[in-house]
Image (cartoon, rainbow, N blue to C red; front, side, top):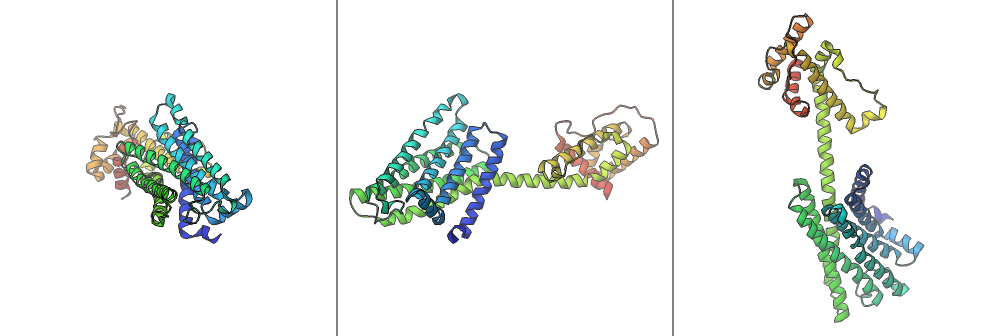
Length: 374
């Protein structure tokens, strides 16, 4: 049990769990997306395989389902995860009416799983579930089990790396980084699987067991799996970091706009948009930050439009050059409005962004709000 919670294992479980939870959340928003289902199954399969490799869990499976069950489930889940990754690439590249092509990928997967089950069944009880090594490599069931699992892994890994190279050419910068790291990881795993297969073939064809092949191949698979995990996690982590920064920016801008908003609401109370009373949980949701921010910008923009007949200059242009002068003009216009001075009553657009570019409106508004509060 203690080996399950080593620092490396804990870090891996945290990354796997975070990636899986994020994909499940996305899946709830788009439940009919085949690529999303596939990548979620990929993470779940590799995560399950990782857990089955832990001695505590493997021993528990062997005790409950029979000797070798942990090793079999480990390899089956890994194969399912790899097949799901290949289906992800196929589902993303093929049009919906050609999804039948995806079904053909289940044929080699089913054959590999069936071969592993048969191999385990013909393996003597004392050799079931043992690690591949010189003492058992020439046992027919053991060799067949690992060779069947290895051949499928080689096929799937090479196919996925090929698809990653194709996607790399058209991906954006952050996705390219993830694809590059994942591709290197899968290539390392493929190299490790090839070495393991060569180890088995040499032992059966010529007799000697070249242990150096396993000593090199096993670390390659381990490091390759870690690289794959890092690669598929990176785009999601980067997106979450970007979303967090954007939320923090909107929170900051929301507070900075308050002085300007307060002045305009005092002059034009009706610019405040109606909204349902916020629930307690709404304040904890990220989207509520954006909702309140955009609402404030819209209300300020509406207030400036209503004030525009009293403005004697292009407020947005002046604010970009001299925020202090723009603030003075704003206060002067508010004074003229409060005094009831005559105007042409012709409202005009004050900010350059317009209805579809709120972010462009924020820059002069922030400069104006800062000048007012200073």
